[in-house]
Image (cartoon, rainbow, N blue to C red; front, side, top):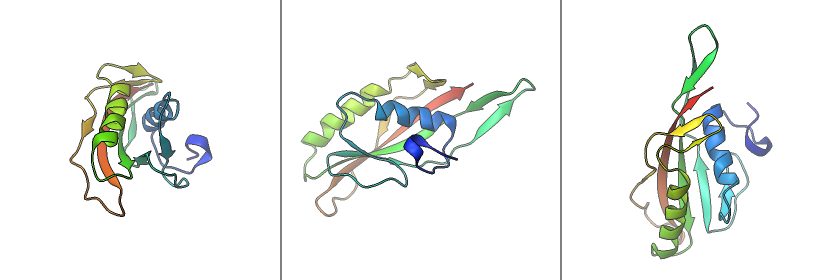
Length: 133
């Protein structure tokens, strides 16, 4: 499947809509997409999460529960700068928000920070929605 900005990805339409929302985010940091080129910190790194779409009924209605994982990475040992970027991303996906066929069903879930490696502090965030088309 040809994905966001020409990168080859096996993402559902709902996942692509969620990623497009991050791409169009005003003032966002650098962005790294699956199978895309690297970028300097600070950055959002989108990780592929498994997903499937299904056809519901005979009318061709499509339904799925898209999920993406975004790592918020900064080149600092501490969470101050990282926390601001996490807050901005969480605010972009509020429960009940609707866009491009996606409804955000759960508040984004920041996970505990990953161990700092090569001076990069990273916090993964799980973002889930409901897609209907």
